[in-house]
Structures are given as structure tokens and as C-alpha cells.
Image 1 (cartoon, rainbow, N blue to C red):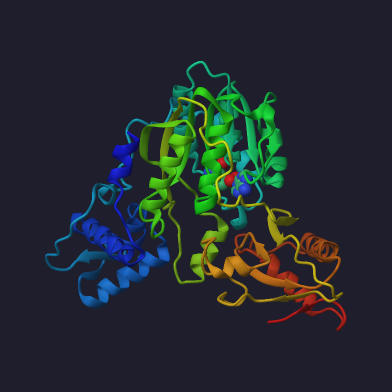
Image 2: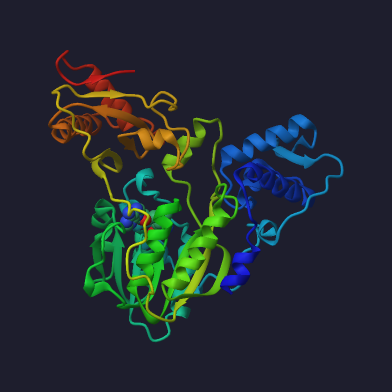
Length: 455
Ligand SMILES: C[S@@+](CC[C@H](N)C(=O)[O-])C[C@H]1O[C@@H](n2cnc3c(N)ncnc32)[C@H](O)[C@@H]1O
């Protein structure tokens, strides 16, 4: 299975990536006219900004025509006869979900629906610094069904980086669940929603696992951030958690997520073998993600409104057949969690640790490439994200300098914001208020020798 899956992935170079996106786009349009969001949900997790540029180029060249749908929306139609050649992986379309994974009957229970609403209400806003894309509810149901089918005689399940799915699963199954995640605030706010036999472990995959967790779980579910390094770290840690004979289920990015991904996946599959993992099944389009506020805001600042759950992943199911042959750490560095977080209700600010300067003046300035304070992308590879030392859950970013007591100063300002919000709640709760923007205004209003906001 591993070889067949790996060879179905195209060999790709950065230069050819856009052409692959273009071919996929044209193939989809040959089937039927589609709107932008329909195309997006079928485009194998292609970045909406990339897709929109390629679509605009095709419209400009006449390869694609823009027409009107009956409801007044834009529909794109292929202009003339255009031949394309695609590999097997490119021909995979998101509209087709693998029939092997289905929604269970209890999904319609009103009791379960209401406890899911409580979980959704308890959650803080998703954090871009931790790549928090929560599953849609229907995906959680399907995944729960899958895990129950895979469990065999396993009594314990580990969730690595999947805290909301773990909360939902623990309402549906009496298996003992252990939830590993770096985000202590999410674990804290969800804590009452896990079953009493569950265990919550604040854990960063960049650190060694506690010996008591190693090879303990007959079933491991992992949903990593899809950046190159974290994907590898999660795969390795998931395999360390699994007992020999157990199963590891992990959500992987689809072919058009970024240039060069196919090569990365081939490397990961080779690494999986040395970790004792045997690829047993690939379930296409199995995971569907809600659009988090930070993603909605990022694309809105590029003129793209995302109203559809367009992001999808493939599930890879491994069986652990033996112990890892990797005795030493690979040469690549483990990432470390470097963020300290501050909350005002559900909104959060993340501040990179270790940035305190030696001056007493706090200054907040925009990061080059950001639109004012707004980061136009959610990609952790972007220079804007990499330069940012403060990131909000509305995808606002800034560079922070100074202040020996940065944490205390921020806490003091954020408490003021919380108090003023409580005193004057927004008349339009649907309209988000941005924490970083408010913080900037507060800082700018301070006395000269107090913290400064540089625009
Ligand atoms: C793509 S989200 C998956 C969430 C899942 N879809 C859910 O709904 O439960 C990635 C998860 O990995 C966690 N995470 C990010 N970086 C991590 C790290 N270095 N160590 C452990 N967990 C991490 C995030 O907090 C988040 O819960």
C-alpha cells in the first residue's frame, strides 16, 4: 500500500506547481461550470489566493470564461477545447468522499447535538500559531465511527493534537482517552467535556514523551499542523505512543497544499517504515475543517471571502508492526513551543517568548508584508508569520520590542480592554473587535515614556 500510494504522487518542482493547479482547475471546469468556492473545495487544498490568481490569469487569456449563475453568482466555464494530462493523484477530487468512512446513526441524536454545541461554545478562538483548524461536526462523527471500527481489542486511545475531536469522541465511546496538546488554554476550557476517565496532557511534540506513555496505546489519532517539520514530529510521536500491533491514524495534507509536498510525503512514508509503521489504508477526503476566524480574516484582507468548509485532508491509517529502528534523533531540529498566550474572553494574543529587550519602553510596529497589522496569509512559511512576535486569533501580527516586564504590561492593558468591553458590549456581536488593534490604540494613548505604538 505504501509503495502504491507513494508512486501515485507526482514528482513536482516549485516551477511546475502552478501548472498543476491550472490543469486541475481546467479538468474540473470541463466537467461542469463552477463558482470559486466550488472549485476551491475540489482543488485538493490549494491555497485560495493561489487559486484565485490562476483563475484570473485563465480568464484574462480566454482559457476560462466568467458567466452568471441563476442566483447572480459568478460561474466559471472552460473556453474552447483544452487538453490536459494529469497523474492519478491530481485526478482525485474532493467531491468524492471515500465510502469506507460513513456517518454513524447516533449522529442525529439531539442529546449528542446539544453536547456538541456546548463544546463549540467552550472553545476559545482558534490560534494560527498552533495551526488550529477544528474538524467539522460531520467529520468528527465519521472519524469516531472509523476509530471504533479500528479499535480491535484496544482499551486506550491517544489523541495527539486533536482536542476537539477527542472531546466529541469521549461523549461517544467509553474507551479511556489521553489527550496530548500544546495548547493548555484549549485543554483547560474543554476539560469538563472529556469523560472522567480521560487524561489531559499539555505536551509539545518537540519534547521527549514521558516513558509511561511510550507504546501504551492500541489506537492513536493525530491531526498535525501541516507544516513540514511538525508533520514529521507528529508522525514520529504518534508511532512512539502506539503499541506494537496497534493502529495510527493521521490526517495528511492533499496534493495541492503547497509546492513540493509530494516529495515531502514520500520522505515521510519512508520514515514511517523505519518507525515500524506499515501503511494500511489511505482514505481520501476524510477530514473536513471549519474555516477558523483567523483564516477568514486573512483571506478577506486579500479580497477573498471564505464561507465554505473548503479545507480537506486525507487520512492515512498505519499498523504498527514492529519497534522503531530509529535509535537517535534525526538531524532536523525539533520545534519548540515559543508562545505565551493572553486571553480576553475567547480572543487571544500569542507573544513569542524571549523577545524582551533591555529598554523600559514597549513598542508595537507592523511587520513588513502585513497589510497594516493584518497578515494576508495563514501559512507558517510566510516571512510575515516568521517575523511576527505577536499574533492574534484574528490573524493580526506585529513586531514587539522593549519592556523588561512585557508580560505584565500586556496583561495590564488586556485587563483594561476586558473591563471596557464588559462595560460596553458591542452592539453588533457579529462584527469582530480586534484585540491587537485595541491594544495598539491603548499603547498609543500612553504617556511618552510609556509603551509606544508605531504605525
Ligand atoms: C490542525 S489542528 C487539529 C485539531 C483537530 N482538527 C481537532 O478538531 O481536534 C492541530 C493541533 O495540534 C496542536 N499543536 C500545534 N503545535 C503543537 C505542538 N508543537 N505540540 C503539540 N500539539 C501541537 C494544536 O494546538 C491543535 O490542536
